[in-house]
Length: 566
Image (tube, rainbow, N blue to C red):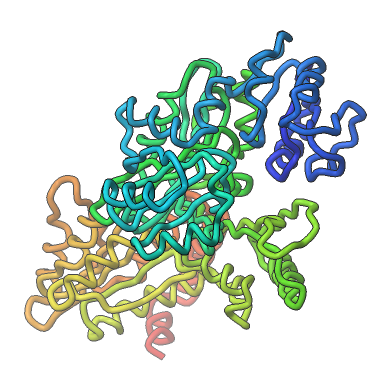
């Protein structure tokens, strides 16, 4: 398919996953890294170069035998790449790598381009006087970071107060030889990330916003989509796209943009990674095109079709779990983690071919489900936090709610229909008048939990279906419940007389059976099983009527009525 050779600078786990895609697409690759690096383990080409991505001669060799060079790590010898005289294209550009590699220069670039970041200043020297002066400028606590070579929390230090300065100077004397900068403390509530693809034509595309959870400064889990309001998700994507658009020309490929979501609702860009990123591993199983395939497509100018960054379905959720090495006396925990993963539907294990060491990234696990609730249940089992494997239990697709338990005899008929069609559902009481906050939470969160249709039963004023419909993007089916005063006509009128833009599908008074049947038909739009089951249900109904007609025609009406009364 592709005649050009791609040179990959670095052969770690990111290179390994690039190779997996390249092999599938018949893209020839050459890796520059140490022998038996993770990427080389799955590619036996004799063209691979055993060497270092910081060595000028090794980089020159790579440039001479490939058409396009790219990075799986940014800590490279930039000066030697600048002196490259071959015609080999380098993506992202050397100027981009140079800008991003130095985190202070990166921050200054973002500030110059109107992108919100935490205030950052250079630290001239690693001594008490300088750190006290820095604290007076930025306030305590503040972050001190190395300008280069930092990753997974390495090179990041929290300076809590004046007393902690002496301890830092004592514990980390090697920082005297490092280039440092300080960053104003960002009071974030969540850490978010967005993978952005920039094409050769300078178009940008963003993947869904995700939430990353860190333990001991190392990414532990990644939730896709992020567990924040959809407006925040959209703002994060726009900010990430703006960030990557600000980079120099020929900034082609995949970029990871890390963000802080602050207590006041603002978003700050934390930093950029000029390559595939840990927070994008979920895309392998959850998105139409993975970050690794998107990177190769971008740097080779291959098609990037509409919607390629989308989740595979509109209900796909995913949790990525990093697999870290355990201490020697806890190796059994690693084995149990792998076994639990392989025993979990929708979970995929990716190991990187690394020797196990404490806190070393050995691999990752992608857990896919139809709701975040389903993914979280699977995660608990995989981590051994739940002894019962509940992963085969289906997440509810239909929510049945009612304003009072007095409505349950009517609404129970909907439950029976859904059970007949093997549709997972939940049933609860949500009163529009007595529990308004509970109603708001239920309506607002239902679609995020994987609910696809809501059946709401209500009598009297019957405000529940309409109020829920006003707060959820899901279809709502209203069931008017017969009351003691107006026989349910009041409920029917209340449910059907909704203002434009707030639709509620209404069924007959007390007819929750039809509400459930309608819900199954709605679900059948995206699930062929429900369509097939509904056709069978209709055929059974038809056969019942035909049989009754035959008996009536044969026996006559009087005998039929006589037998019917029995």
